[in-house]
Length: 207
Image (tube, rainbow, N blue to C red):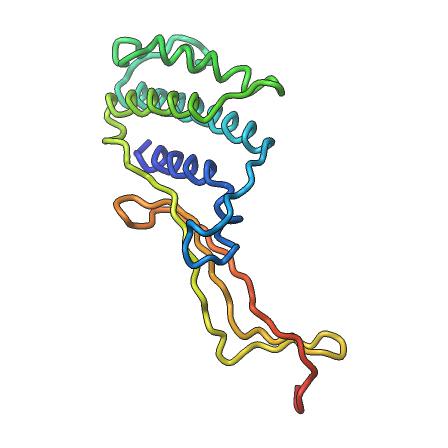
C-alpha cells in the first residue's frame, strides 16, 4: 500500500469534521466571518468519530499486513487479526503496546451502539498511527491539511427556460459552492454543488 490511501483518510477526516461548513457557505456572505456558524449535529458528532476510528484501525491492520508480506515476516495465526500482526511486528514498531490500546478502543466502537469517542481522542489515535506508518516507511511528514470553502457566481447565457404549467421558470445564473481540503494553499480534495437563481414569469411568444 502506498501513502495515497492514508492521505485520503486524513483528508476525509478534515472534511467530516467540517460537516457544518456547507450551511455557512450557502448563506452567500461575501466574507466568511459574516456567516452564522453551522449547527452542531449531535448524531453526527457521535457517529463520525466512531466510524473514523474503526476505519483507522482497519487501515493500520492493512498496512501492517502489507509490511509483513513485503518483508517476508511470518504471522503465525491461521486467521491473523490486528493483534497477531502487531505481535509479529513488535520489534519493528515504535510503540506496539499503544497500538494494542487502539485495538482495544476500536472494539466497543465497532460493536456497541452506546460507545463513542471524541475528536480529541481520534486526533491522538491518528497521530500514533501516522508515527508508526512513517517509521515503517509508508508515509512522510504529516501534511498540514486545512478545510476551506468558496462560492462563485456563474452567468447562464442564454438563460435556460422550463415550462411549468401556465408559467415559465427562467434560470439566469448559478451559484457554485466548493468545500474541500487544501495543502500549501492548493486544493487536494473537493466537492461541489450548485443552486440556480431563477425568475418565474409568463410564457413569451414561441416558448
